[in-house]
Image 1: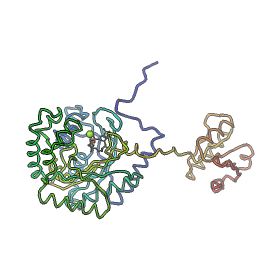
Image 2 (image 1 turned 135 degrees about the vertical axis):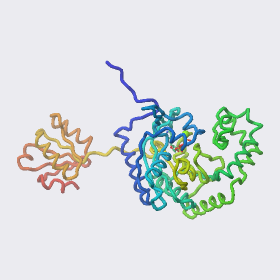
Image 3 (image 1 turned 90 degrees about the vertical axis):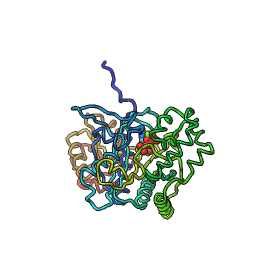
Length: 413
Ligand code: ATP
Ligand code: MG
């Protein structure tokens, strides 16, 4: 026998018994995001590699280590590791800046990152996310965070925590970066390899490090003093204060976390994450923030923007399992042509119906009906002669006989 081929490491099939959970979170996304005026956009899964090296940033793990990149006709192409860059490309390319602001877009779909697979971390995973373009005021940040929380509530997830921080703007952040580098300099040799590499290129990312020995260094009083200093400039501080006021008024609870810096280069001012305590170490379900420089960086008119992305597998792992939907009806009959005809009649009337395609015994068919359907539609010789059908409620066991045309009306017994 030939070798059995297996799914690639870090990827998964979404099986029929799981698909209802996916439909549920996708439909809720459409429902909730539409309430806020967001429209769905679908961008290609492959993009030119440069979009991500310029958009996501050369110093990020995503671009450095995690991209699936290949050559085709002398072009370097990458499977999208995230979708903000793709949406921004589309916004620019399709002249959406001419539309009246804000432009509100949402997306869902697969993303690809070459990471070490583990619980909550796959190589092909799915995100649902939103991007809002054209608004610099904190109202936009607040609306996006509120909408994320309301989406999670609509899924039935209440036990989640919003973490919030402001990274300031490039000007005030530069000063902070320098102070951080200075205070960490004496400890450079003790930092982990990743942190040493990031020290020059992206010192803010050090704060995100999960290595214990690095965390210990960040707890030293002089380092804490720098981390907790109010480095952000007056305008950034005002934006942050406003955002917090809106969130308070909208009764969105949040924890401020000065160590929250997010992995990507493009954020400024607001960054946030939503975490669950029920997810183990991969506990972030949502990450987002403001990225006012990205549209300009990718060649568009400078346009303020804010958005988030959620990991759909992580959302699903937090939800109670849904039972697969049963068929409305299963036709039990030894007369396949009549069963065929009745099945089509009922399907036209809007029911989900199957019948036995393989000439099984009557009792076997009835057993199958009890497993897969709510009602058995029984067509024996007598029913066929009288143009009737017996309908058995497979939950209660009750059975009635009805004329074919009226059969549907009898279903509420
Ligand atoms: P993490 O800290 O978990 O690596 P991240 O900062 O890389 O997350 P983002 O790029 O902000 O994540 O993506 C947003 C969300 O997408 C995450 O909060 C998470 O729920 C989900 N996510 C990210 N990477 C993966 C992955 N490899 N597998 C499954 N879900 C993921
Ligand atoms: Mg990551």
